[in-house]
Length: 125
Image (cartoon, rainbow, N blue to C red; front, side):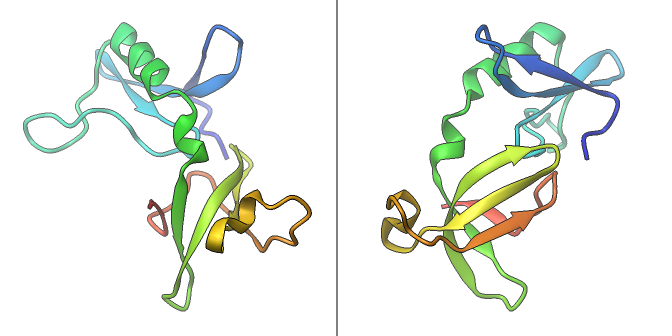
């Protein structure tokens, strides 16, 4: 569920790119999976940035990372290659992608529903 204090950021065509959260005099940045993307400061912790920098960060991040291959760690500890099928504050759906199966038209794809924001069990491949 999307926190009420997150501020939506859209690109020029009105597609949502992510959110910003006010933090002191700056903002923290979150992508469409709900993961924090705020740059780390000297102490190794996310360091809030100004509004313009937050917008530029989300614009540069774009949406292309959603098309990448990911790895899903299942509750039994096994891992599956997956692709993101849907991402929203209602949850994230990924589909199994062994041997490119997620791209096969008409394939009966195994789906996994993840909460928003996604946890550490979904990682870039």
